[in-house]
Image 1 (tube, rainbow, N blue to C red):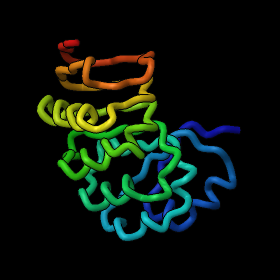
Image 2 (cartoon, rainbow, N blue to C red; image 1 turned 135 degrees about the horizontal axis):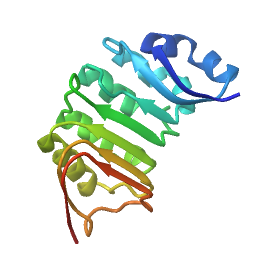
Image 3 (cartoon, rainbow, N blue to C red; image 1 turned 45 degrees about the vertical axis):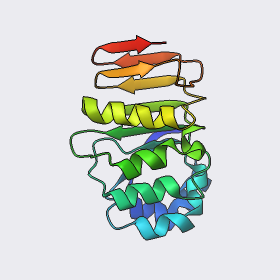
Image 4 (cartoon, rainbow, N blue to C red; image 1 turned 90 degrees about the vertical axis):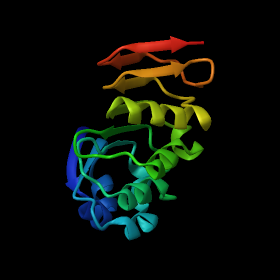
Length: 168
């Protein structure tokens, strides 16, 4: 069988992640209680099995989120959910997301945040390599996207809970 979504403590993935992925394939991983885990993500080989990461609605310190996004083992990430009432997206997080190693593989992006943060995030992608494999984009805020500057894959789904201004 195939488990679509599993919610686990971040420390459980760090400690038993290899066993988890040997037991059964998993679609989305939702990590809880990431605070204080930054120093461990660089050595977490189990991250190579993570394809979809749900961090939406969580209050995660920048240092912990940047550490998981910067891990050399997070090599097969295809989708990420971020944002929400508790999560603040800093410049460091935007930079980590827009690096080619992450932005270049994302097929799915869901972001919930205020308009200003959403625009800053989309600009970070535009100023990097874009989202060349993106197929599904979900945004909760209004965003102005210059399609002439943003490299994307063949979008199949575009869902916005606000106005969209398209140029280019």
